Amino acid sequence: MDVTQIILQDHAEQRRLFAAINEIDPSETEALAAVWGRLKALLDSHAEAEERFFYPDLLKTGAGAADADDAEEETRDAIGDHNEIRDTGEKVQNYEVGSPEWFSAVAACEVANSDHMGEEERQGLADFRKRNSLEERHKLGVRFLAFQCAHLTGVAVKDKDVDDYVEDPAQTLGNV
Image (cartoon, rainbow, N blue to C red):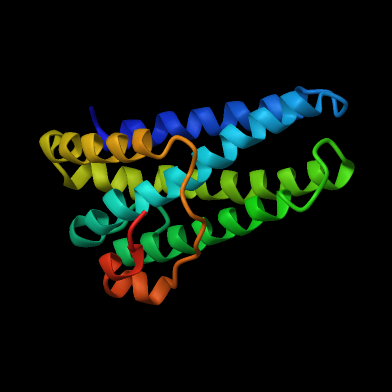
């Protein structure tokens, strides 16, 4: 079990669920609500798990990868992205499921999430794999997966202050 593989598997599931929403007829509101409910819970618990178990260690061990100068840049960008994903995800809740406005809000969340995943895959995840042993990635993977399994229905949605997070991730997390 490798935390970077768990994150990549979550990314694949997020992509699959966004694609499913795009293939479901707008009149199938029960199906749309069910798929969105699962996707929203996954997006929120995934971001929180990364903020608890991945990014604090990346800040300690990372050096930057691809188009990121250092681990702080990777982390700042990721936490800001998570805030945007949370915010766009919350906006979906304001519209009637299956309405054009609902689909538009889901699309905005998908754009924010897709941009984030692409950056994270070429920056933070690559950086982390280069600088952390499989044993360390396994330990974090166990904690990450256990957290997600304990929060299958999601977590409380709360944006994080990027500067405070980079300064001391633990102070921004609170209890879930």
